[in-house]
Image (cartoon, rainbow, N blue to C red):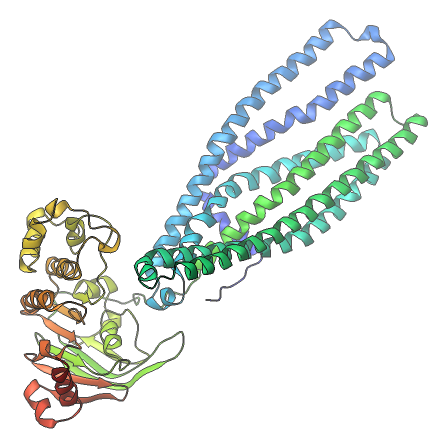
Length: 586
């Protein structure tokens, strides 16, 4: 999936609002940063005062003067220690809170994105963007304003004091500052691109690891451990290559700054030496001058060293913004209304649909009426649009043309929450969350009592096997329910829908992956679940839909046959062909 690129200025402008809730902490942090610079700025002045006084007349250097200056400096160091503690503590806490706020916003935005986004984005990449990428934001949020604020104070004050000591020498030294800034800017642009590639590659590596570990049974079944190791090693080596390139750029960056450091000190040796010979600088002034220039160079070097952290933070912010700017394709209209006590009458009017990412057209001008309480079955060849049709009702995707109404209201004019609360979905591929049996059933109705959960399990035919589990309802099901059989997982998912108690039910090949015994038990549960509800069933095993009120045969050309089992068998068309072929295969 392609993402937008941003300028550094745009990213900082988008990032600044995250400081707003913590502006008090930020102001205090900057005040403390200013206090920590005072010691460094004052120390050369104290040394200058002592040196020049001693050179004029050592008798003028009294105990009272030395102790007074020492006491002033001691007081400043105490303030420096307290200020530094605040910066290290509350400054980092502020950064961590901003990181937390950003992660919360990213997660909330991800909840609003459509299936199209997740179909085209690897989970490992998403995980990297909302975890690892935001780790560096903590340091960025804390150190970025702090470092630049300290640097600005030191550079301005150093220039003013150095200019008073010797303006020509100061101008000679400060000529190197814009040159150094220009070189750093050029290298930084390359470093940022490299960090972006590095983050992308670690996301790819995470996705590869996740894919391999989740499919470890398939890997072992086909004895493809060596193949998976080879794929992993390719990604691992690519990550190493990107990282090596970033270290090369950082080496160039560091070397260039050291060259400029050397040139600035060389200027002091030559210029300062000649000015001392001419008597234009006193020895004490020269000592203070060297100390201030050292402070200046240390400040510039610190900013330059911070540039790596800065670029890491900016890269993390950019990847965060790329999530935040991903289009929300499915959303509530401004005039959307709550769906109250739906009956379950669904109508498709001239509905056309194509997937927004690849523009693969599924069907065009489809018209269909589903009556309230009707049991409708949908059959047809793979790729005919059966699952897509059902996915349009809860608005997992939006129609390209036409409209779908529920009880006479366009579903786009209903709030997503109330629409989806009215629909229960049981899929072939059951997803159970890591937790207990109880947690997974209760997911259908947060806040439900234990009695309600157990009643839903009984109605789904799940209570009996649950009571034979080691910890019954408190049994841990494992990641994705790996500790349970397919039939057990399916009955838990049905219990979850029983607890939700929706008026509309979608059964998407809910029994096609089960063995005969499990299929019988699950089918019995589904029949119980379907009572009194508008039910859409997608099925490959046609024996399970014989008693449906109506059966549709859906192909790429649309609905080609429609009627109950007896009517369609009498037509001896596509449904008849499917049904007789299924019987021959038994």
